[in-house]
Image (tube, rainbow, N blue to C red; front, side):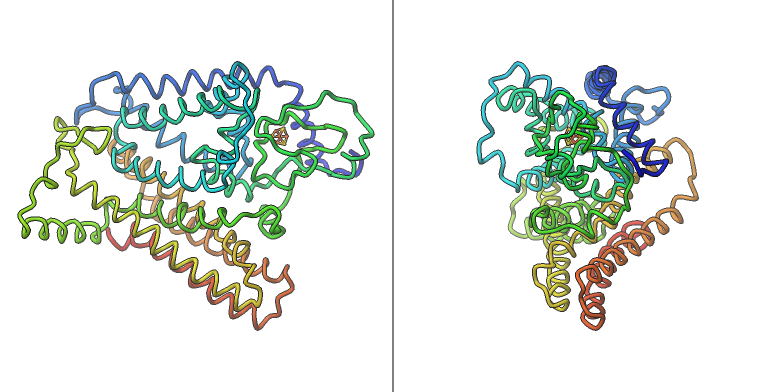
Length: 459
Ligand code: SF4
C-alpha cells in the first residue's frame, strides 16, 4: 500500500509471506504437535524422578522444565509481543482441532457453545483442578489436564463446523486470557473496511478464517489468531504496527463483553494469585489448621486421610507427597476466597471509579486498563516455576528479585497510565478524572500488595 512507513512495509511483506507459505506453516504445526505429544506422553510413562535427578539427566524433569518453565511463560509473553500468533501458527491443540474438523460431521455451532462465559469458567476450573493434582509437578497430572483438553478439542472439531476451530474460538480454557493479553500487542492484522467493500483487487481466493471471524469487521488483535491467511485480501488486510495502548484505549461496547472484565478481575488476577501463592501463604496454613482443629474437636477423622486417587488429589506416597481431603478442601476454599475477595474488591473499586468519572458504563473499559498488571502477574507466577527449577539445579539467580520488582512496578505504571488516558480519551473533566484515578490507584496497589506478599512479605 502507498504511504506506508518502512517497517510497516516490512510487516506487510511478512504477513503476505505467511499467507504464501501456508504449507510451510502447516509443516511447522505438525512438528509442534509431535514435540508437544512427546513432551506430554513420554514423561508420564517413565518412573518418578528421585531426589538426585537433574534436569539435564532426567527426561521427566527436562520435560517439566521445558513445559512449565519455558513453554508456558513464553507463550504468554508472545501474546504481548505478537498477538495470538501462537494460536494461529503454533498451537498443537488448535492444529489438531482444525485438522479433525475436516473429517467430522460439520454441524452448525449451537447457541450454548457460543455462550461467552465458557473461557472464564473453563480457565477457573482448570486452574483449580491443576492445583489439586499438582499439574506443575507431575507428568501424569499434566497429561491428564492438557491431554484431556486436547482430546476434547479434537472431539469438538469432529462435531462442529468443517475446517474451523470452534474449540479455540468459544471453549479453550486459555482463549479468554490470550484474547485479553493480545490487546496489548504492538502489531495486528488491520482491516480497511471501505477497501474491503470496494473490492478493487487483488483477486485472491477467499481465506479460511479458522476461528470464524468476520474479517471485514475485524477490529484489533484480541480475537484474531494472526494466522496470516487473509493477509492482502482485497488489498484491505495488512499486518501493521500500532501502539500497545491502542486497542484498550479505543475499545467500545461493541468489541467488549462483561466477561472480559470478569475473567480479568476474578480469574487472571484473583484466582491466579491464589493458585500461585497458596503454597507459601501463612493464611493458607492458618485456614487448614483451624479446619483441622474443628474436625478433630468433632471427632471427624476421615478428611485427614490422604487416600484419594492421584487424578482427584495429589497422591504420590513414594515421594511423601499426598494431599488429604482436608488439603483439597483448603485449596478449594483458599483459591475461591482469593478469586472472590480480590476480584470483588477490584470490581467495587472499578465500579466506583466509573461512577466518579460520571459514566457507569465505563466500568468494563476501565477494568481492561488492569491488563498489563494481570499479564505481569501471570508471567511472574508462571516464571516462579522456572526460577524454582533452576534453583534446584544450583543456580542462584540473584537478579530475579530486583527484576520482579521492576516488572511489577512497570506494569502498575502502565496500567495507571492506560486508565488515565482512557478517561482523557472519553473527555472526562480533570476533577472527575482525578477522583476516579484514586480508585484506580487503590486497585493497582491492592494487586501489587498481593504480589509483594508472595515474593517479599512472606519470605
Ligand atoms: S482474521 Fe482470521 S484469517 Fe485473518 S489473520 Fe486473523 S485469524 Fe487469520
